[in-house]
Length: 371
Image (cartoon, rainbow, N blue to C red):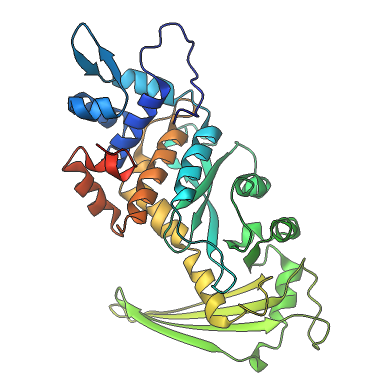
């Protein structure tokens, strides 16, 4: 946290920036959802915890003193969000056990954006929109960037991934990011891509749709749970001039895929079907329908394990923090807390936060601050 620049004027500073950020991060890891809750956690923190967090020692009162809520809120609203994200993402990346290897299936990163609904003004207008990248296997956040109002996620895709090691990894994204520029960028970084294709890319979609899918072998998986049965079929078509297929002019593409999902809801008896076309540059070594199907399915972990968790467990969209960079700072600290919990084996974040709340030293240990 000491790497984050202090936005305040040096005169009159009573609490160091690293102690403020460390205290705020620990409080969020203990379940605090707002600056009011963070201030209350700080006011109740015992002396040995405040000492570990580096808070100011008042020699006249002979005790450590925590910053109040107003100080915490004011500092958070003025921080450089990019630097804070980079510092925290680098710390999380150091704790990410999934590293590419020559003989292992390439680990994957999902990229997707989320708008913080509580930051939208009642009169309309744009709010805070964050683009994040997380690992597929354990949902650790490796990077985050705020997309400026009026800008598109597409232009911030490379900026987000510039801070992340991509060599030997797979990057998954929805159809918005299925562009030739992104494909070339990922290839130049030594990464693979798995992109879904929709009709916003009309020409590419039509070419993929005309491939002879009826002649291509099908990989089938079936699952039951959560009140429904699901049957998924995945087909993988190699691309190249050696085949009598329509020419697919997409940078470095090696395979196209078709995934069909058939779902039966047990209670209502309703049947639904969904079809997805896509394209990838994965080499023949790892080009198997089961791998592609898993990459596409696990991409949505970013919705279930990050966006949904922040919305439901931390009630992020109900937050009224709107000043300066405060909404982004809180989102970043929630990323830190959820990623750290998942790294230590927690799959139920709500249960993990309750566990952290019951002992003031537990969130410190979670974040590597050992008593």
